Picture 1 (cartoon, rainbow, N blue to C red):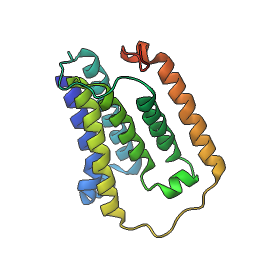
Picture 2: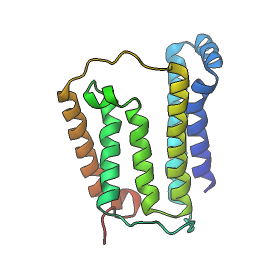
Picture 3: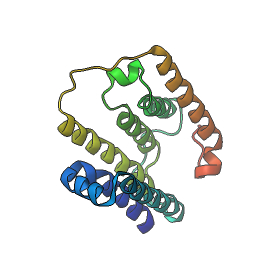
Picture 4: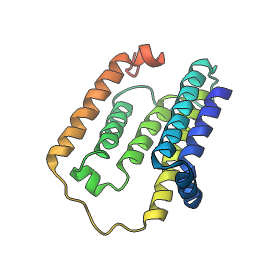
Length: 188
């Protein structure tokens, strides 16, 4: 569990640093250069992801609570919606235009779906931390950017792109979920 928690802490701190200490981020970017800074940031995120993956696999799960639901339609719908929101954040569709933080909201839906169906210690650590991180990011982005008055142009075709990509990723991950994560996302 130590690897998992270390990876999650590294993920949280690396993402929080620019939001909490923007002036220090600027100084660091000036010292290193913009691209080298991004490279270092990317390596830190990669290290966090590897720690999370290996920490997940090595952690022995212990029951924390009885999940209120098992795998099924509601949890699958939340994950699908989360994936669509996640990908909608990358294109100029109506979803992105009307939803201020689609990527973070998608992460929260994905995390909540998993917390509703998994009550073990490693699930609580992973999905709980990522949900809290996404909420934290929303607050920090709102604080940094203030009220958005201009809405970017949008096209429904980009919403369709996000829905298709989200659906394809959902189907692929669902199909390989047992092989990837050791549990079936479908009711037994």
